[in-house]
Every structure is written in structure tokens, then in C-alpha cells.
Length: 173
Image (cartoon, rainbow, N blue to C red):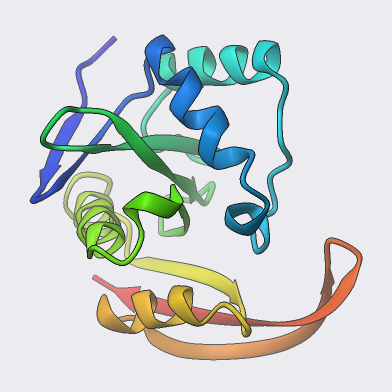
């Protein structure tokens, strides 16, 4: 397995490791953290298998989602993750980010996602990166705007069984 670590100031991006299980389960079990997310909580066995699989998988495989661990630079402890989906043709990628409650509001999401965007442009040759958020998720929209992403569209839809308006933002290489 090829090592993967990208520094991003107070946080670094790296592969998941088995010792991330407790921290992963803690933030993925927080209902407020999961409110705007499409993933569902996993029991420890499924979470362990998930961490094992994404820890050994490709960083940005085409046509599939991958998860990149976000760790605090100070102690390398897991504080969140970034979901990445590169399209089949490799020209565009979708991102999503989840950070533990205690890691929010510190600029860590901007550092981590910004570094991931740079990686996708520079190393993977992606031409467009986009993110979709519930219009009510103000911190997510603020993050996208801070990263220089521009508003593209909004669409009324249903998410987790409830009506919502999804907004899409993008940035181009």
C-alpha cells in the first residue's frame, strides 16, 4: 500500500487505520453531525470493516466513493473524514466532509478540504470539483464559499425522507 499523507496546517489527510475506530464511531454516532449526511451509523463490526477497506483502497478511484481520514496534526488523532467520488472519466469529483463536533469552527475543514481539492487538481488531473449541501446547512455553504467555490444551482428534492433544497457549488482547475 502506497503511503498517503497530505499536510494541511492544523490537520493532515491520511488513510484510515484500525485505531481510528473509537473516534470514527464517536462522531458518526452524533445525530447533529449526521443530520445533513447521507451515511448511516454502523455497528462496530461494520465500522471496523469499513475502516479496513477504505484504509487499503485507492485514494481517488474512478467511479466510486472513497473516504480519506482527517487527522489533527498535533497528535494524528482522527477528527473527521472527506468523502471523494471521482467520475468515471476522471474529469470531475464530488466532495463531502464530516468533522467531529470538537473539530468544528477551527478552520480545520477549510484546511482539509482545500488540500483535498489541490490534490485532485494537481495529482489526479480533475478539472472540476463540486459539493452538494442542504440549503439549511449554513456552515457547509460558508465553507464552500471560503474555498472559492461558486454557486451553480439549487434543486428541491427529498433527503432522508424529508423535503429539502440542495445547493451545488463548484470550483474549476
